[in-house]
Length: 301
Image 1: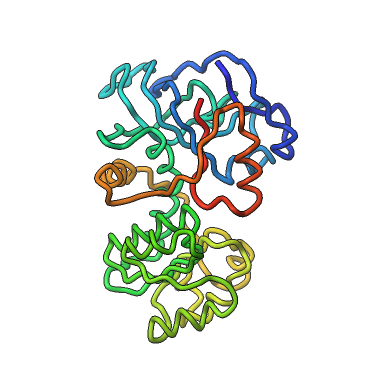
Image 2 (image 1 turned 135 degrees about the horizontal axis):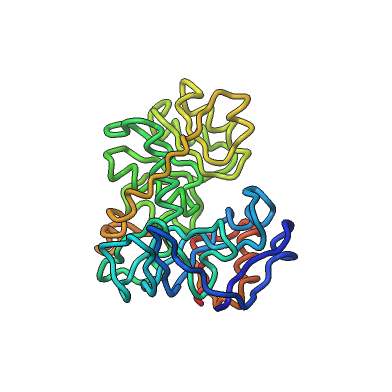
């Protein structure tokens, strides 16, 4: 099979190679799928750079959708040919950006939800849900989602609305309409954000979920009465120095089935920016690193 992987840590443009390798064999409790779509995230490039070290070679591609083609020992409740999606195993010599991938955790792909749309869900939904959960009970409260034009931010705005919050979303024009359709009130990001938010909210907001690039924290601090009302996924310096909070590391993949059903019914979405053949992986790498992703980019083996 083909797999996108690296044999040394470094810049992904330099170390990644599309290679022929042996298909992985599912271990106890695992399934293997024939990959139909693989979502890409900034975490893939960080893995190439050595954020999680391990035996080499390693693969990239953390989220996938496809059909089951092999079952590991002890697996029940799923059969060969079933359409599924979930987070790919990425600690071995290949991961999701390949013709075949292993999964420890998976969910049925609902009727009406394509492989591309399903593969766009795992990382954005898990991260956003964990972040909103870290804020506490958001029902009836005003929540600012900073960086709501990112896939995580778009997911967070929809999740917070579903949990009963009034959502103010900072975003550009690309997804302002989508966010408004989801029930959020949209303000422009950039200089003066704090004033625009507090004017719209009628004072400080109750809580902030931050998925914007680092650098917006001075504005965000003006929107709350206590830095601890902010949960950030991106500004690690603020976590150390300013008293804002992060999430715990208890991953929330348990909610993926629920949000896949919503997506199949048109009640939740992660926008798809573009898809690429597996061999054209350098194109989404360049777009992702430009800061202009504007939605999800996926590889199609």
